[in-house]
Image 1 (tube, rainbow, N blue to C red):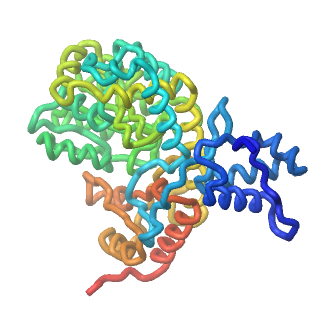
Image 2: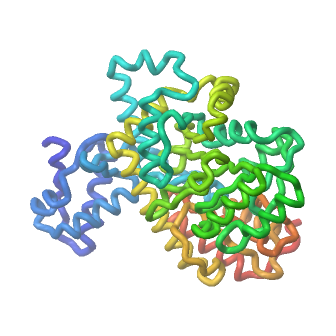
Image 3: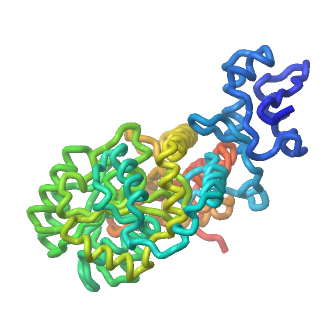
Length: 455
């Protein structure tokens, strides 16, 4: 029997047939009868051999993928994954503070890609000093990826970086100095808070509503503070999950030009949108630094990001790369570039979107009445406002007692009622069942009286 011809002997007793298929596959993997990397039969072929409907086998494959047993790759087939210890198996509870993407088989895909690279003669070049901006073929692949997601750029405009945080650091160093005021949303990304502390920037929070940054408030903030830099996340903003409408993006672009300012746009979640959204940077390219990461759509450990900078800053950005790391790791950049070219990255992005939709649906069902009723594309995080009478320290402490990890948001306007809440991250839970348990417990906390003292 070749591994691709795996056929289960289904029991005759009661119970869903699709679950029987999954249970038998899991048992054969555990016993070593089916090895990691084995390719399974296509769903239609397996259905025909077992005398079942394609729908039953499709449901079985979906459940097996959810359990982490298999992963599908566009154009290649369905493969058995390497088994790993389940996160949280030894520790009870769920982490709703860590904003990571759920696993969708990316580890095996990356491992296979690295193995392909290692077997080729090009490995020597990937271990040498290379251009600070990144290899041209890597930048071409990133250019293609960005174009698909709404941000056109030529390879010469792209800088490969050690993740998005590295790119943000370089971009901010181009337009802000120690002591300068930088405008951002009233609730902002924690990495920006860390960067401001390290580099000595003063962050000024601008008012938001349920659609994101308010243009009138931004205009006023530029005038009153004298700031010349705006850092923002127009798409699936963290921590709130808001998406700026096109009309507001146009208004903000006009405000930036009028105040002779610059934009640093963090677009880490663009790939989660069901259709491409034109970035703010595309409306004011001569005054924008556009930053993306491959952490959320692939894997955080790759530490590969990309930045588009105004042409007038090109030489300074190259020097910034040289000064802060010489170049991004070429081997990891090669992995990303190959997965762009083969479609593996697009497949992973689609799987991440599916997981985001599933996890959002669970959260909206279990936290119904607590979450804002705002139609928004599903991301890896949701904003949970605090009801009147609730305090954030007590909520975090009560959640911790139930094994739920929450973290305070990066609020720059602590007295603003619209900033009273907490970000709920949905990706760290290793399974949908694990996530459901944590969200049910969180719901119970909101239904109970606030605990004031824990002594």
